[in-house]
Image 1 (cartoon, rainbow, N blue to C red):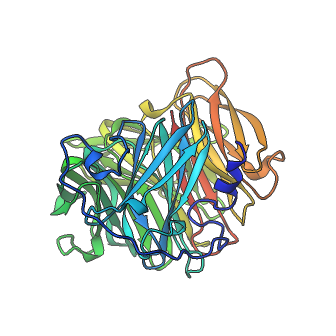
Image 2: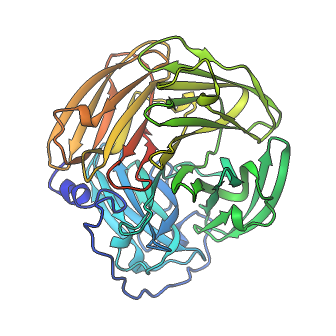
Length: 491
Protein backbone atom coordinates (compact mmCIF):
# COMPACT_ATOMS: atom_id res chain seq x y z
CA UNK A 1 0.00 0.00 0.00
CA UNK A 2 2.99 2.27 0.14
CA UNK A 3 4.03 4.66 2.88
CA UNK A 4 0.83 6.69 2.59
CA UNK A 5 -1.39 3.92 3.93
CA UNK A 6 -0.42 4.21 7.63
CA UNK A 7 -1.16 7.94 7.52
CA UNK A 8 -4.51 7.44 5.89
CA UNK A 9 -5.79 4.55 7.97
CA UNK A 10 -3.55 4.07 10.96
CA UNK A 11 -3.97 7.55 12.42
CA UNK A 12 -7.59 8.07 11.55
CA UNK A 13 -9.70 4.92 11.35
CA UNK A 14 -12.63 6.62 9.66
CA UNK A 15 -14.82 9.20 11.31
CA UNK A 16 -12.77 9.56 14.46
CA UNK A 17 -12.75 5.93 15.53
CA UNK A 18 -9.35 6.67 17.01
CA UNK A 19 -11.37 7.60 20.09
CA UNK A 20 -9.68 10.90 20.65
CA UNK A 21 -6.33 10.49 18.88
CA UNK A 22 -7.19 13.55 16.80
CA UNK A 23 -7.44 16.89 18.54
CA UNK A 24 -10.59 18.89 17.84
CA UNK A 25 -10.29 20.93 14.67
CA UNK A 26 -9.91 24.70 14.93
CA UNK A 27 -11.73 25.99 11.86
CA UNK A 28 -10.49 29.11 10.12
CA UNK A 29 -12.95 31.64 8.74
CA UNK A 30 -14.21 30.70 5.29
CA UNK A 31 -15.57 33.12 2.74
CA UNK A 32 -18.74 31.46 1.48
CA UNK A 33 -19.62 32.21 -2.10
CA UNK A 34 -22.84 31.74 -3.97
CA UNK A 35 -22.08 29.81 -7.18
CA UNK A 36 -22.87 31.44 -10.54
CA UNK A 37 -25.98 30.29 -12.40
CA UNK A 38 -25.55 26.63 -13.38
CA UNK A 39 -25.01 25.47 -16.93
CA UNK A 40 -27.08 22.64 -18.42
CA UNK A 41 -24.16 20.22 -17.91
CA UNK A 42 -24.36 18.73 -14.40
CA UNK A 43 -21.64 20.02 -12.19
CA UNK A 44 -19.16 22.51 -13.67
CA UNK A 45 -20.90 25.71 -12.58
CA UNK A 46 -20.80 24.64 -8.94
CA UNK A 47 -17.44 22.88 -8.96
CA UNK A 48 -14.10 24.55 -8.26
CA UNK A 49 -12.00 25.40 -11.35
CA UNK A 50 -10.53 22.37 -13.04
CA UNK A 51 -12.99 19.87 -11.56
CA UNK A 52 -14.69 17.76 -14.27
CA UNK A 53 -18.45 17.16 -14.36
CA UNK A 54 -19.75 14.03 -12.59
CA UNK A 55 -19.00 10.77 -14.38
CA UNK A 56 -21.00 7.62 -13.65
CA UNK A 57 -18.86 5.26 -11.56
CA UNK A 58 -16.30 7.98 -10.87
CA UNK A 59 -18.59 10.04 -8.64
CA UNK A 60 -20.19 9.30 -5.28
CA UNK A 61 -22.54 11.49 -3.28
CA UNK A 62 -22.61 12.10 0.47
CA UNK A 63 -26.02 13.40 1.59
CA UNK A 64 -24.84 14.17 5.11
CA UNK A 65 -21.66 15.95 6.21
CA UNK A 66 -21.42 17.04 9.86
CA UNK A 67 -18.58 18.93 11.51
CA UNK A 68 -19.42 18.39 15.18
CA UNK A 69 -22.90 19.76 14.70
CA UNK A 70 -24.74 19.08 17.99
CA UNK A 71 -21.77 16.83 18.91
CA UNK A 72 -22.16 14.69 15.77
CA UNK A 73 -19.54 14.30 13.05
CA UNK A 74 -18.84 12.33 9.87
CA UNK A 75 -15.88 10.59 8.29
CA UNK A 76 -15.43 9.00 4.87
CA UNK A 77 -13.37 6.09 3.62
CA UNK A 78 -12.94 6.36 -0.18
CA UNK A 79 -11.62 3.35 -2.09
CA UNK A 80 -10.07 3.42 -5.57
CA UNK A 81 -11.75 0.62 -7.52
CA UNK A 82 -9.72 1.26 -10.65
CA UNK A 83 -6.52 -0.25 -12.04
CA UNK A 84 -4.55 3.01 -11.95
CA UNK A 85 -3.98 5.80 -9.40
CA UNK A 86 -6.83 8.29 -9.10
CA UNK A 87 -7.12 11.96 -8.27
CA UNK A 88 -9.90 12.72 -5.78
CA UNK A 89 -11.75 16.02 -5.43
CA UNK A 90 -14.19 16.42 -2.54
CA UNK A 91 -16.48 19.44 -2.79
CA UNK A 92 -18.63 20.43 0.19
CA UNK A 93 -21.97 22.27 0.06
CA UNK A 94 -23.94 23.89 2.85
CA UNK A 95 -27.71 23.49 3.07
CA UNK A 96 -28.22 26.50 0.78
CA UNK A 97 -26.07 24.90 -1.93
CA UNK A 98 -23.17 27.29 -1.33
CA UNK A 99 -19.55 26.19 -1.47
CA UNK A 100 -16.17 27.78 -0.86
CA UNK A 101 -12.89 26.95 -2.63
CA UNK A 102 -11.04 26.57 0.68
CA UNK A 103 -13.46 23.87 1.80
CA UNK A 104 -12.46 21.60 -1.11
CA UNK A 105 -10.10 18.69 -0.42
CA UNK A 106 -7.93 16.83 -2.93
CA UNK A 107 -5.88 13.63 -2.79
CA UNK A 108 -4.17 11.05 -4.97
CA UNK A 109 -4.97 7.41 -4.20
CA UNK A 110 -3.17 4.36 -5.57
CA UNK A 111 -5.05 1.55 -7.32
CA UNK A 112 -7.05 -0.55 -4.81
CA UNK A 113 -5.93 1.78 -2.01
CA UNK A 114 -8.25 3.76 0.23
CA UNK A 115 -8.20 7.26 1.66
CA UNK A 116 -9.81 8.68 4.79
CA UNK A 117 -11.52 12.06 5.08
CA UNK A 118 -12.34 13.04 8.66
CA UNK A 119 -14.64 16.05 8.60
CA UNK A 120 -13.31 17.72 11.80
CA UNK A 121 -9.83 17.37 10.29
CA UNK A 122 -10.74 19.88 7.55
CA UNK A 123 -9.79 23.06 9.41
CA UNK A 124 -11.34 25.27 6.71
CA UNK A 125 -14.81 23.79 7.13
CA UNK A 126 -16.87 25.89 9.58
CA UNK A 127 -17.50 24.49 13.04
CA UNK A 128 -21.02 23.11 13.33
CA UNK A 129 -21.23 22.63 9.54
CA UNK A 130 -24.25 20.70 8.25
CA UNK A 131 -24.27 19.93 4.54
CA UNK A 132 -23.40 17.47 1.79
CA UNK A 133 -20.52 16.55 -0.50
CA UNK A 134 -19.72 15.33 -3.99
CA UNK A 135 -16.62 13.16 -4.46
CA UNK A 136 -15.20 12.96 -7.98
CA UNK A 137 -12.32 10.86 -9.25
CA UNK A 138 -10.43 9.96 -12.39
CA UNK A 139 -11.02 6.24 -11.70
CA UNK A 140 -14.09 4.33 -10.45
CA UNK A 141 -14.51 4.76 -6.69
CA UNK A 142 -16.72 3.75 -3.80
CA UNK A 143 -17.00 5.10 -0.27
CA UNK A 144 -18.41 4.37 3.14
CA UNK A 145 -19.48 7.08 5.58
CA UNK A 146 -19.58 7.01 9.37
CA UNK A 147 -22.05 9.21 11.22
CA UNK A 148 -21.14 9.31 14.90
CA UNK A 149 -21.10 11.38 18.02
CA UNK A 150 -17.73 13.03 18.61
CA UNK A 151 -15.32 10.85 20.64
CA UNK A 152 -15.86 12.59 23.99
CA UNK A 153 -19.67 12.69 23.72
CA UNK A 154 -21.88 10.60 25.99
CA UNK A 155 -23.74 8.51 25.05
CA UNK A 156 -21.67 7.46 22.04
CA UNK A 157 -23.11 6.05 18.81
CA UNK A 158 -21.89 5.28 15.31
CA UNK A 159 -23.74 4.29 12.14
CA UNK A 160 -22.25 3.54 8.72
CA UNK A 161 -23.72 3.80 5.22
CA UNK A 162 -22.41 3.31 1.69
CA UNK A 163 -22.16 6.62 -0.18
CA UNK A 164 -24.72 6.44 -3.03
CA UNK A 165 -23.32 5.86 -6.50
CA UNK A 166 -26.59 5.82 -8.48
CA UNK A 167 -28.78 8.94 -8.40
CA UNK A 168 -32.37 8.58 -9.58
CA UNK A 169 -35.52 10.66 -9.69
CA UNK A 170 -37.21 8.24 -7.27
CA UNK A 171 -35.65 6.85 -4.08
CA UNK A 172 -37.20 4.29 -1.71
CA UNK A 173 -36.63 4.23 2.06
CA UNK A 174 -38.13 1.20 3.86
CA UNK A 175 -37.88 2.67 7.39
CA UNK A 176 -39.65 5.95 8.10
CA UNK A 177 -40.78 5.80 11.73
CA UNK A 178 -42.34 8.32 14.08
CA UNK A 179 -42.65 7.05 17.64
CA UNK A 180 -42.80 3.32 16.83
CA UNK A 181 -41.50 1.32 19.83
CA UNK A 182 -39.67 4.52 20.86
CA UNK A 183 -37.94 4.67 17.48
CA UNK A 184 -37.93 7.56 15.06
CA UNK A 185 -36.38 8.36 11.68
CA UNK A 186 -34.67 11.20 9.89
CA UNK A 187 -34.46 11.10 6.09
CA UNK A 188 -31.72 13.11 4.35
CA UNK A 189 -32.11 13.82 0.64
CA UNK A 190 -29.43 15.31 -1.62
CA UNK A 191 -30.04 16.91 -4.99
CA UNK A 192 -27.35 15.65 -7.39
CA UNK A 193 -28.51 17.87 -10.25
CA UNK A 194 -27.06 21.24 -11.27
CA UNK A 195 -30.36 23.07 -10.75
CA UNK A 196 -32.63 23.28 -7.72
CA UNK A 197 -35.22 20.55 -7.26
CA UNK A 198 -38.54 20.07 -5.53
CA UNK A 199 -38.75 16.70 -3.75
CA UNK A 200 -42.14 15.14 -3.08
CA UNK A 201 -41.94 12.96 0.05
CA UNK A 202 -44.69 10.36 0.33
CA UNK A 203 -45.21 8.14 3.38
CA UNK A 204 -46.96 4.77 3.18
CA UNK A 205 -48.19 2.42 5.90
CA UNK A 206 -49.72 -0.99 5.44
CA UNK A 207 -53.04 0.81 4.88
CA UNK A 208 -51.69 3.07 2.10
CA UNK A 209 -50.62 6.71 1.77
CA UNK A 210 -50.74 8.45 5.16
CA UNK A 211 -48.81 11.68 4.56
CA UNK A 212 -47.24 13.79 1.87
CA UNK A 213 -45.06 16.91 1.82
CA UNK A 214 -42.72 18.80 -0.48
CA UNK A 215 -39.26 20.21 0.17
CA UNK A 216 -37.08 22.50 -1.92
CA UNK A 217 -33.45 21.38 -2.33
CA UNK A 218 -30.79 23.58 -4.00
CA UNK A 219 -28.33 22.06 -6.46
CA UNK A 220 -25.95 19.58 -4.75
CA UNK A 221 -27.35 20.51 -1.33
CA UNK A 222 -29.32 18.31 1.05
CA UNK A 223 -32.33 18.59 3.34
CA UNK A 224 -33.03 16.64 6.52
CA UNK A 225 -36.58 15.47 7.21
CA UNK A 226 -36.88 14.60 10.89
CA UNK A 227 -40.27 12.91 11.13
CA UNK A 228 -40.73 13.94 14.77
CA UNK A 229 -40.80 17.55 13.57
CA UNK A 230 -43.12 17.03 10.58
CA UNK A 231 -46.75 17.70 11.44
CA UNK A 232 -47.98 16.06 8.25
CA UNK A 233 -46.73 12.66 9.48
CA UNK A 234 -49.03 11.30 12.23
CA UNK A 235 -47.63 10.16 15.58
CA UNK A 236 -47.02 6.42 15.69
CA UNK A 237 -46.54 6.27 11.91
CA UNK A 238 -44.93 2.96 10.92
CA UNK A 239 -44.22 3.85 7.33
CA UNK A 240 -41.88 3.59 4.39
CA UNK A 241 -41.07 6.61 2.23
CA UNK A 242 -40.92 7.33 -1.48
CA UNK A 243 -39.00 10.45 -2.55
CA UNK A 244 -39.82 11.74 -6.03
CA UNK A 245 -37.94 14.67 -7.58
CA UNK A 246 -37.58 16.53 -10.87
CA UNK A 247 -33.77 16.19 -10.61
CA UNK A 248 -31.73 13.05 -9.80
CA UNK A 249 -31.42 12.61 -6.03
CA UNK A 250 -29.84 10.31 -3.46
CA UNK A 251 -30.89 9.78 0.15
CA UNK A 252 -30.14 8.09 3.44
CA UNK A 253 -32.47 7.13 6.27
CA UNK A 254 -31.92 6.32 9.92
CA UNK A 255 -33.65 4.67 12.85
CA UNK A 256 -32.85 6.09 16.29
CA UNK A 257 -34.07 4.86 19.67
CA UNK A 258 -33.37 7.45 22.38
CA UNK A 259 -34.23 4.99 25.15
CA UNK A 260 -31.43 2.60 24.18
CA UNK A 261 -29.19 5.02 22.28
CA UNK A 262 -29.12 2.69 19.26
CA UNK A 263 -28.55 4.55 15.97
CA UNK A 264 -28.88 2.74 12.63
CA UNK A 265 -28.38 4.41 9.24
CA UNK A 266 -28.82 3.07 5.70
CA UNK A 267 -28.71 4.16 2.05
CA UNK A 268 -31.91 4.85 0.12
CA UNK A 269 -32.52 2.57 -2.86
CA UNK A 270 -33.27 3.67 -6.44
CA UNK A 271 -34.62 0.36 -7.81
CA UNK A 272 -35.96 -2.96 -6.62
CA UNK A 273 -36.03 -6.57 -7.75
CA UNK A 274 -38.22 -9.63 -7.25
CA UNK A 275 -35.49 -11.12 -5.05
CA UNK A 276 -33.40 -9.58 -2.26
CA UNK A 277 -30.40 -11.20 -0.57
CA UNK A 278 -29.55 -10.75 3.12
CA UNK A 279 -26.11 -12.20 3.99
CA UNK A 280 -26.57 -12.17 7.77
CA UNK A 281 -29.52 -12.79 10.05
CA UNK A 282 -29.73 -13.58 13.80
CA UNK A 283 -32.22 -15.07 16.21
CA UNK A 284 -31.14 -14.73 19.84
CA UNK A 285 -27.46 -15.29 19.02
CA UNK A 286 -25.52 -14.00 21.99
CA UNK A 287 -28.21 -11.39 22.49
CA UNK A 288 -28.33 -10.44 18.78
CA UNK A 289 -31.59 -10.41 16.81
CA UNK A 290 -32.54 -9.18 13.34
CA UNK A 291 -35.45 -7.95 11.31
CA UNK A 292 -35.83 -7.61 7.56
CA UNK A 293 -37.72 -4.52 6.47
CA UNK A 294 -39.21 -5.03 3.00
CA UNK A 295 -40.76 -2.27 0.89
CA UNK A 296 -42.92 -2.97 -2.13
CA UNK A 297 -41.74 -0.66 -4.92
CA UNK A 298 -44.32 -1.94 -7.41
CA UNK A 299 -47.50 -0.01 -8.28
CA UNK A 300 -49.66 -2.96 -7.19
CA UNK A 301 -49.77 -5.30 -4.16
CA UNK A 302 -47.24 -8.16 -4.14
CA UNK A 303 -46.84 -11.36 -2.17
CA UNK A 304 -43.62 -11.78 -0.19
CA UNK A 305 -41.90 -14.88 1.23
CA UNK A 306 -38.62 -15.12 3.16
CA UNK A 307 -36.29 -18.11 2.77
CA UNK A 308 -33.94 -18.53 5.74
CA UNK A 309 -30.78 -20.63 5.24
CA UNK A 310 -28.76 -21.45 8.41
CA UNK A 311 -25.06 -20.66 8.02
CA UNK A 312 -22.99 -23.82 7.73
CA UNK A 313 -25.86 -25.88 6.29
CA UNK A 314 -29.16 -27.20 7.52
CA UNK A 315 -32.74 -27.16 6.33
CA UNK A 316 -33.97 -24.00 4.65
CA UNK A 317 -37.17 -22.61 6.16
CA UNK A 318 -39.64 -20.60 4.07
CA UNK A 319 -42.29 -18.34 5.55
CA UNK A 320 -45.92 -18.25 4.50
CA UNK A 321 -46.71 -15.63 1.83
CA UNK A 322 -47.69 -12.15 2.98
CA UNK A 323 -49.43 -9.52 0.84
CA UNK A 324 -47.80 -6.08 0.86
CA UNK A 325 -49.52 -3.05 -0.65
CA UNK A 326 -47.98 -0.70 -3.20
CA UNK A 327 -45.02 1.27 -1.68
CA UNK A 328 -45.88 -0.13 1.76
CA UNK A 329 -43.53 -1.80 4.28
CA UNK A 330 -43.48 -5.30 5.75
CA UNK A 331 -41.27 -6.43 8.65
CA UNK A 332 -40.07 -10.02 9.08
CA UNK A 333 -38.58 -10.91 12.47
CA UNK A 334 -36.91 -14.33 12.93
CA UNK A 335 -37.80 -14.23 16.63
CA UNK A 336 -41.48 -14.38 15.63
CA UNK A 337 -41.03 -17.65 13.70
CA UNK A 338 -41.16 -20.66 16.03
CA UNK A 339 -39.64 -22.96 13.38
CA UNK A 340 -36.33 -21.07 13.61
CA UNK A 341 -34.13 -22.20 16.52
CA UNK A 342 -32.59 -19.87 19.05
CA UNK A 343 -28.90 -19.13 18.56
CA UNK A 344 -29.47 -18.93 14.81
CA UNK A 345 -26.97 -17.39 12.41
CA UNK A 346 -28.29 -17.47 8.86
CA UNK A 347 -28.60 -15.79 5.50
CA UNK A 348 -31.92 -15.07 3.84
CA UNK A 349 -33.53 -14.46 0.48
CA UNK A 350 -36.69 -12.42 0.08
CA UNK A 351 -38.84 -13.54 -2.85
CA UNK A 352 -41.71 -11.43 -4.14
CA UNK A 353 -44.21 -11.46 -7.00
CA UNK A 354 -43.04 -7.97 -7.98
CA UNK A 355 -40.16 -5.62 -7.30
CA UNK A 356 -39.20 -4.92 -3.68
CA UNK A 357 -36.28 -3.43 -1.74
CA UNK A 358 -35.11 -4.45 1.72
CA UNK A 359 -32.83 -3.46 4.58
CA UNK A 360 -31.77 -5.63 7.51
CA UNK A 361 -31.57 -4.40 11.10
CA UNK A 362 -29.24 -6.13 13.58
CA UNK A 363 -29.52 -5.21 17.24
CA UNK A 364 -28.49 -6.30 20.72
CA UNK A 365 -30.75 -4.66 23.29
CA UNK A 366 -28.74 -5.89 26.29
CA UNK A 367 -25.57 -4.30 24.93
CA UNK A 368 -27.53 -1.27 23.63
CA UNK A 369 -25.96 -1.55 20.20
CA UNK A 370 -27.15 -2.18 16.66
CA UNK A 371 -26.70 -1.55 12.95
CA UNK A 372 -28.47 -1.83 9.62
CA UNK A 373 -27.48 -2.79 6.08
CA UNK A 374 -29.04 -2.81 2.62
CA UNK A 375 -30.05 -6.15 1.14
CA UNK A 376 -28.87 -6.91 -2.40
CA UNK A 377 -30.71 -7.58 -5.63
CA UNK A 378 -29.27 -10.63 -7.43
CA UNK A 379 -27.96 -8.46 -10.28
CA UNK A 380 -25.73 -6.62 -7.80
CA UNK A 381 -23.55 -9.68 -7.20
CA UNK A 382 -20.09 -9.81 -8.80
CA UNK A 383 -17.07 -12.15 -8.60
CA UNK A 384 -15.06 -9.32 -6.99
CA UNK A 385 -15.80 -7.17 -3.92
CA UNK A 386 -13.87 -4.35 -2.31
CA UNK A 387 -13.85 -3.98 1.50
CA UNK A 388 -12.68 -0.45 2.41
CA UNK A 389 -12.15 -1.01 6.13
CA UNK A 390 -11.30 -3.93 8.43
CA UNK A 391 -10.10 -4.05 12.04
CA UNK A 392 -8.58 -6.54 14.41
CA UNK A 393 -8.64 -5.35 18.01
CA UNK A 394 -8.00 -1.75 17.00
CA UNK A 395 -9.03 0.45 19.95
CA UNK A 396 -11.61 -2.23 20.73
CA UNK A 397 -12.95 -2.48 17.16
CA UNK A 398 -13.18 -5.81 15.32
CA UNK A 399 -14.76 -6.68 11.98
CA UNK A 400 -16.31 -9.69 10.33
CA UNK A 401 -16.98 -10.04 6.60
CA UNK A 402 -20.10 -12.04 5.76
CA UNK A 403 -20.27 -13.32 2.18
CA UNK A 404 -23.36 -14.63 0.41
CA UNK A 405 -23.33 -16.67 -2.81
CA UNK A 406 -25.96 -15.49 -5.29
CA UNK A 407 -25.74 -18.61 -7.46
CA UNK A 408 -26.59 -22.31 -7.27
CA UNK A 409 -23.04 -23.75 -7.12
CA UNK A 410 -20.34 -23.40 -4.47
CA UNK A 411 -17.83 -20.55 -4.87
CA UNK A 412 -14.14 -20.77 -3.93
CA UNK A 413 -13.01 -17.37 -2.70
CA UNK A 414 -9.85 -15.59 -1.65
CA UNK A 415 -9.65 -12.53 0.58
CA UNK A 416 -6.51 -10.42 0.39
CA UNK A 417 -5.92 -8.05 3.30
CA UNK A 418 -3.85 -4.89 2.83
CA UNK A 419 -2.83 -3.62 6.25
CA UNK A 420 -1.82 -0.10 7.29
CA UNK A 421 1.52 -1.52 8.42
CA UNK A 422 2.33 -2.31 4.79
CA UNK A 423 1.90 -6.06 5.34
CA UNK A 424 -0.59 -8.22 3.45
CA UNK A 425 -2.34 -11.46 4.27
CA UNK A 426 -4.41 -13.95 2.30
CA UNK A 427 -7.18 -16.29 3.44
CA UNK A 428 -9.47 -18.71 1.58
CA UNK A 429 -12.97 -20.08 1.96
CA UNK A 430 -15.86 -21.81 0.21
CA UNK A 431 -19.23 -20.07 0.05
CA UNK A 432 -21.94 -22.72 -0.42
CA UNK A 433 -24.56 -22.39 -3.13
CA UNK A 434 -27.15 -19.79 -2.07
CA UNK A 435 -25.46 -19.83 1.34
CA UNK A 436 -23.05 -17.70 3.36
CA UNK A 437 -19.53 -17.78 4.77
CA UNK A 438 -17.75 -15.58 7.33
CA UNK A 439 -14.22 -14.21 7.39
CA UNK A 440 -13.80 -13.11 11.02
CA UNK A 441 -10.67 -11.00 11.36
CA UNK A 442 -10.05 -11.66 15.10
CA UNK A 443 -9.73 -15.38 14.25
CA UNK A 444 -7.03 -14.77 11.63
CA UNK A 445 -3.64 -15.24 13.32
CA UNK A 446 -1.88 -13.66 10.35
CA UNK A 447 -3.52 -10.31 11.13
CA UNK A 448 -1.77 -8.84 14.19
CA UNK A 449 -3.79 -7.32 17.02
CA UNK A 450 -4.11 -3.58 16.54
CA UNK A 451 -4.38 -3.88 12.76
CA UNK A 452 -6.47 -1.72 10.46
CA UNK A 453 -6.65 -2.04 6.69
CA UNK A 454 -8.76 -2.91 3.67
CA UNK A 455 -9.41 -6.05 1.65
CA UNK A 456 -10.41 -7.42 -1.74
CA UNK A 457 -12.50 -10.58 -2.16
CA UNK A 458 -12.25 -12.61 -5.38
CA UNK A 459 -13.95 -15.70 -6.75
CA UNK A 460 -10.95 -17.85 -7.73
CA UNK A 461 -12.62 -21.16 -8.60
CA UNK A 462 -12.93 -20.41 -12.28
CA UNK A 463 -16.71 -20.31 -12.12
CA UNK A 464 -19.14 -17.46 -12.66
CA UNK A 465 -20.59 -17.45 -9.16
CA UNK A 466 -21.52 -13.97 -7.98
CA UNK A 467 -21.02 -12.75 -4.44
CA UNK A 468 -22.30 -10.01 -2.14
CA UNK A 469 -20.94 -9.07 1.27
CA UNK A 470 -21.50 -7.00 4.37
CA UNK A 471 -18.97 -5.94 6.99
CA UNK A 472 -19.86 -5.71 10.68
CA UNK A 473 -17.78 -3.38 12.87
CA UNK A 474 -18.24 -4.21 16.57
CA UNK A 475 -16.78 -2.68 19.71
CA UNK A 476 -17.91 -3.98 23.09
CA UNK A 477 -15.26 -1.95 24.94
CA UNK A 478 -16.14 1.57 23.81
CA UNK A 479 -19.55 1.69 25.45
CA UNK A 480 -22.73 3.06 23.94
CA UNK A 481 -23.78 2.03 20.45
CA UNK A 482 -20.31 1.43 19.01
CA UNK A 483 -21.34 -1.09 16.35
CA UNK A 484 -22.11 -0.50 12.68
CA UNK A 485 -22.21 -2.28 9.35
CA UNK A 486 -21.76 -1.49 5.67
CA UNK A 487 -22.12 -3.22 2.31
CA UNK A 488 -19.03 -4.42 0.42
CA UNK A 489 -18.44 -2.59 -2.87
CA UNK A 490 -19.22 -4.84 -5.83
CA UNK A 491 -17.22 -4.04 -8.97
